[in-house]
Each structure stands twice: as C-alpha cells, then as structure tokens.
Image (tube, one colour):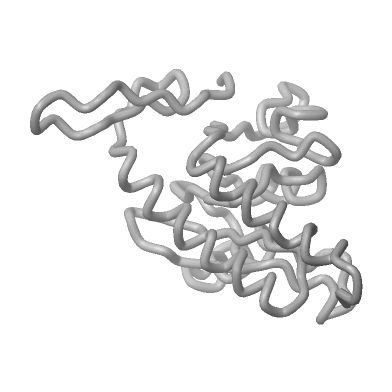
Length: 183
C-alpha cells in the first residue's frame, strides 16, 4: 500500500466532492473525512485549553466514533499520553478487543514513531492525518512505519485533511507560548 494524498475533484452541479483512499479504489465522501477531522480538532482545542500541545484524535468504525483523545502528557506526567494512544485505548475498550480491524484513526498531526507503532500493532486499517510533522512524523515525513514491509501489518495513510486548520491550531498554540509573560 502506498500513502495517498487527498485529491478532490471540483464540484460539478449537484455532484458531491469525492476522493480516493489508497490503492484499494474505495470511494469515500470528502465531507465525512472532514467531519471526523473536525471532531479531532475539537479534541486538539481541548488539549490547548489545558496547556497541552494541541493534538487530537478520534477512532471510527462503521461510521461511528468509538474512541477519542487529546494530548495529556503534561497533566498526566506521562510520556505516552498522546492523542492517538488515548483514542485507540478507548476504542479497544468500546469494542472489547485489542485488534482494531475496520478502524480508521483521524488525527490532527502526523503520528510519531510511538503512536505509529501502536496503531500498527493494534491492526488499525487506516490513519488519516491533517498536517505533517517534519520533526517526528513516522507515517511519511521521517519514516513510514505504517507501510514497512518488515512489520506484520500495514495501514493505509491519508494526509492533508483540513491540513491548514490543523497546522494553524498548532501554530497559534506555540505563538501564545512565545509571547512575553506567557506560561
């Protein structure tokens, strides 16, 4: 499987915008991917409100959100309290199994190596992320654990859903931190 870049043809009359995911040729509605990414952005904003780096994630199966999370590293003093891990932990509890076949995880920032590894080990089908992480991204930027042939599972990767909004959320957070007198 190769990484897929979001491509959406322009709207024509009443035809809805559609995009392809991966090489499987499945067609999904762009609006649905954006809907789930907006939920991940709500999680990211919750993280920001708590002084955490604003990354949010939702786990979706059969069109339903079965898990959600946002960064909680600072509050929990836990280096593993990343949005993706919290979302898949909640998803595993919801389905009563650690194998998350049929699950898509939507996350505002490209997963790091720890999160990408956990997503692969949980057998997640697909990860959809908003913006790339050039310093720690592990599903395309620095490496691609999602599709490493040495591993026993591979995930589809879709990038660029609401990329500008996801990136702007992160930039605004770090801009506030750099302001004089900011905590």
